[in-house]
Image 1: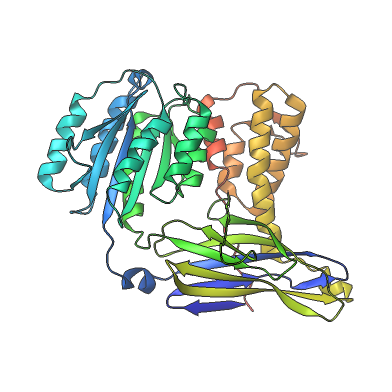
Image 2 (image 1 turned 90 degrees about the vertical axis):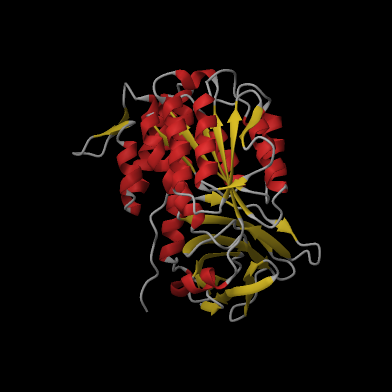
Length: 428
């Protein structure tokens, strides 16, 4: 089932047939924002916040020089008039540009002045990412109605504040700005960065060397500028007696979504989807329903896409009970394959965790499963990254942990294993 309303297309892919007594409904919900819809509204005010790790460890190699060059490169591609600010991140957070106001527009003069301030920075001190987010949040609050996007760069762990502080700052920042995280080198914790980017509707990636940052920063800026819808929300209604087990983004990356119960109805949950450009994302919705007699049909869920308070797309998830085992035994190809790719991301993380703990048997079993899933899904990028951590005997498929693994290769696998291969719908 699919619908299109004002430029947002919503398509539901499922096997609606359930065996007698079955109570679990799975569906892939595809949401696509068309170019016309994205361009139709007024251009939003934009603010870009660059949060640069200036801790002492950034002095090693060309990390710090690369960070400064990347910041300049990002400013070079800012659309003129976009407001921006730069934060120096250590055990504290300091606004280094501008000095006396929350942001300035990206004019030639302001970008030149920002470069001069960057030239004065020197790496020293510690790392407290929650404090950095706290300052970014204060800046975002001073730009009511604007689309605020941040880039957070770090080379290390969040060592100079408690984890509870970071979690609290992330929660306070939700809905105020989006944030992409980048790690440089191999001494950071991917889980810390992903905790930030998942909650703030951004992405996490890593680079090995400082000189690789400039192109990456420019790409993030261009991607941010292409987003013109400040927020979309996926609203899920279920009938009385039914519950939502989960809503999980499965393309272009795997991401568990957090529902917000509606104050108006216990049967409604809202799932914030972050800012959008002209793009498509796909979600796995699983609902538990009360079983009905064979031959009965009912709505398992209604999904509605909202832009603000306006309904811009909708879809229906159905449940039909049958005694025909041929019908009920069918599994939606897309549900199955996206489920496999979500498992792939999970077993990679579990395998890497076990490897760090010295549990060779568990690590081998999990990463062997990851190799199988990556091959089945045609996920060539993850399969390639896995080969840096495990050896695969092409004759019999035996998987063994590599005796020596480069630290960056392990971080790259952890960061990028959430990327999925899109499964197109079957042509009818």
